[in-house]
Image (tube, rainbow, N blue to C red; front, side):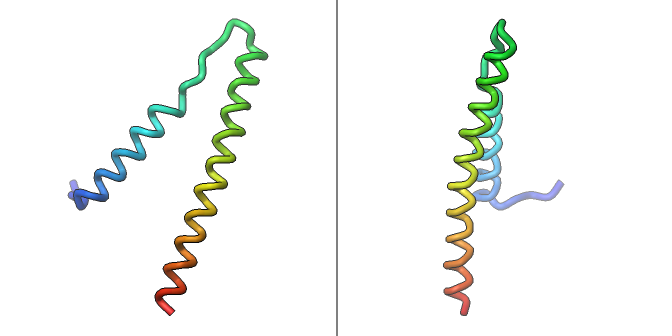
Length: 69
């Protein structure tokens, strides 16, 4: 088993905890249509969050590339 640096392990742990804690936070309702609508709403929100995060990652990568030049 390969040991990871402490900060990388911490980041990995935090990401895993976040994903485990929020990925299944929908309640199964008696009405399947309402449950599906809630899931689609959460999917839409997650996609919007992902777009914001991806834009930030792109910006950070651009800044790193600019600094390296």
